[in-house]
Structures are given as structure tokens and as C-alpha cells.
Image (cartoon, rainbow, N blue to C red; front, side, top):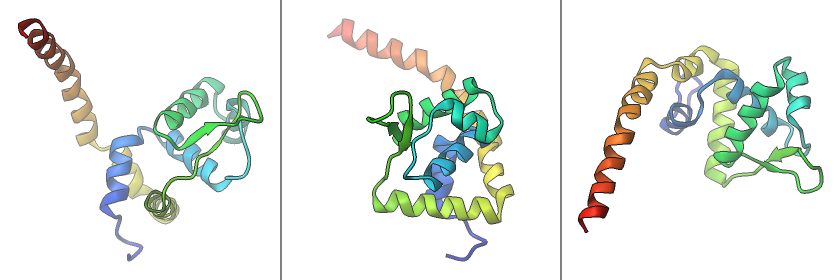
Length: 138
């Protein structure tokens, strides 16, 4: 794929899962240091960020399956290898972020993304109400 294009897989991943530059950079950091485990304080030190902010990012990365608790060190996490397609997509993401950072930033801060999240906030209650009504009807 030419370096000037971003695949649909990368666009979709960033649009769906990456809500901040810090989250992306923590993910890429873990991927770059696959054989080491880290805790929120050590990551915060590396990024000169707050421990609370990094802790939130680690929770997000755990929830979407990119890092996992280190069974040998309490409170530490390590990169969780994905399938070949995921690893290829992340490799492309890292390369594009290195060469064309602005394009990835545009995806992270896309007005469409913010609009979708805003619209989805209004869908939660009506969908739940409809399901509750179906349960009481049946």
C-alpha cells in the first residue's frame, strides 16, 4: 500500500477505538516494548503524564484487548499479541502515525466521531425502554 494512503481497517480502528492521542501513543508504546511489562506510574514517567490519565488509558486498552495483566508482576501490564490481521493493521497504524501524523490526528478528532458519540447518547435510553417494554409485554 502506498505510504500516502490509509487503509479502511486503520481508519475504522482509529474511528472506533482511539479517542485520544495519549491512548494511541500508549498502545504503540506497549507494542514497541512487547517483552516488557509496565505499570501506570512507569508509563506516566515515560510520557510525562499523570498517573490517573495513564491508568484510564490502560483500562481502555485492557477492555479492547490490546494489553493484559502481567501474571508475574502485580499491577503491571504487557502487550497482548493479536491475530495476524490485527498485528498488520497496528503495524500500518504505527507507520502512518510516524510518517503522516496529521492524518491520524484528523481521524482521532473527527467531527463525525464526536457527532456520532453525541447522537448515540440519545439512543441508549430509548433502546433500553423499548427492550423493557418488550419484556413486560411478553
